[in-house]
Length: 107
Length: 503
Image 1: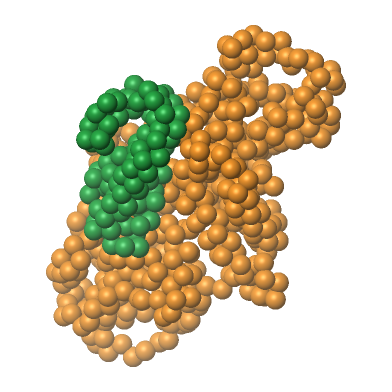
Image 2: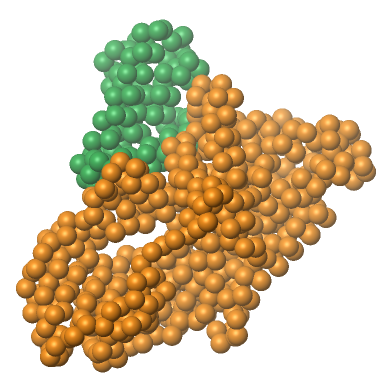
């Protein structure tokens, strides 16, 4: 459950990175449209909210929510480290991300 | 105020592992190995040494402590946290252990909310005011840094001033829920001291009732109570280990055995919110306590904030998450402190106030890290039989801190930071060697017996040592910027020699 929650929250923060104007341009090669922004934001928020479920199922609502806040701190930190020190990894993850494969095949 | 906040945050973060640190700081306990027969060993000890007691309590080993602890209270003796008698036992043999007197993590714990060397009330008021300013700082920080979410993942280390600000923002934003929770809950916990008409200062703990002597009837044999069956039934009920056993009127027909499970489903139920089963003297189940539920929303809120702040309910995963968030908080304050002198160096460098702030920054951040590790060294180097050794440990902590202040007064630039972080790294990296050479059980023995409480402490501080070494290395590379020592130092451009400067 914890691994699942961590993966989901990592995906959420990766999508927050993807929808940032500068990073999007660097990844795709062209400016971000309003549609791309809202789509990636929605996916990111979706992953983030869904990542609560495994925590609540495993630890109950009160403790599960507390653990979720801790896990998203770890995820955000890991993504920040990846963005600043392992950009090729972020780039590869973008190439394999479901949103890009399904909707942005041109990228 | 930043120095005080850093001290509160650092010591508060460290004592998320208070029990584990206390265990490390009492090496006489390291021989204790938990066993399925630990409860029976404690019961036998109490039956032999306190057969007339009114009340027994057996605290079993768990993931955070490996020793067995027994308490008892004789008829007519005061109850509460400090009442009665306590003995620490080897969890496998039931043999009495005599741990050394130590300040332990309890010193750091008390320091983080009431400081040291002054009466507890003004200490708590000072910490309360600092917490309030921290809370205001967090809220205003979110509002003031408009780019905070735009540059969410940016960490521009190539520009040192920008890097400090990014480091400050990243650590602030990533652990923002934790920072808000820990500051606000700390403020609520200290509310009693900030409200001046509250003459108890939030210190009342209750539970000071005296044990009334009751007619105990005929005494029963030690073997009457089927302890193993009781434990098995309780563990099966919630599928979690038993935490403690409390027996009222032991060895009599009126005995009531309450077996506390470590099962907890929420934080709003407070400290006593764990579930338990109650048995009679022959092991028959009398009733089930599903756990205390908060009487109302206000009590539930207070319980939640109190429990979250102290992380009393937290299992290892959540404890580590809290610790990590606490470390991020420390970095947030440290980078915030370091930013001001760096930003103002050109305008104010050389002036007394500026130089004082620079020195206090180094001693307040790097110096406190050195002093905290020095406390652990003092714990092992001061002879175990020394008189007032807890006070000696605390004196060592403050003397080392004072020494770092003197050093920072002499070396107020990056070299001061680098040298003190290098010293902290050295002390941390050598801590496992110190542990291996001064404990009653070697590290190999700890590995074989699965003593991850102790090994975890050594590994954590070794990793912290690596982080300090890395920081010291970065700072020493950058400190090749040579600062002229005249009073007008700041107005002269530094002589660039570093990679960063050249870039």
